[in-house]
Length: 111
Image (tube, rainbow, N blue to C red; front, side):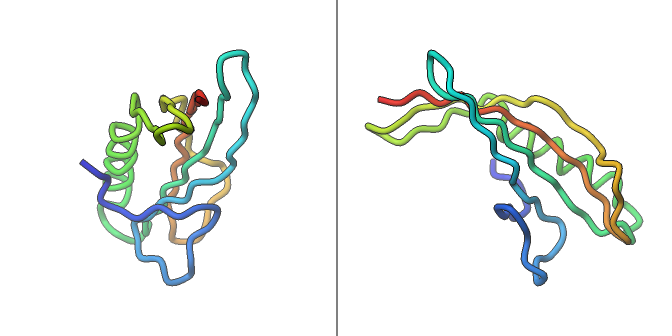
């Protein structure tokens, strides 16, 4: 089951509707057996809603459950595995917005 929100890379457009997530901060390191790529995913909600915190935590669980232990591949190019690494509440706060950051690691193997 896919998460019930839209994801953007690097930044969301001003017209984005809540809730949404932003994938960014992709870093890669070369390993003897493939590459390890770490990426952060920020999930944003409207803090003015009465159930904002509960909704945000539910969305984090939904995304983590969707991506953790997922395999990805492109035939003849690569195969990989995604694993959940951590969850945090960033220190900086935006006015009327709530955010959580999930970090994932993807190990990629090339053919």
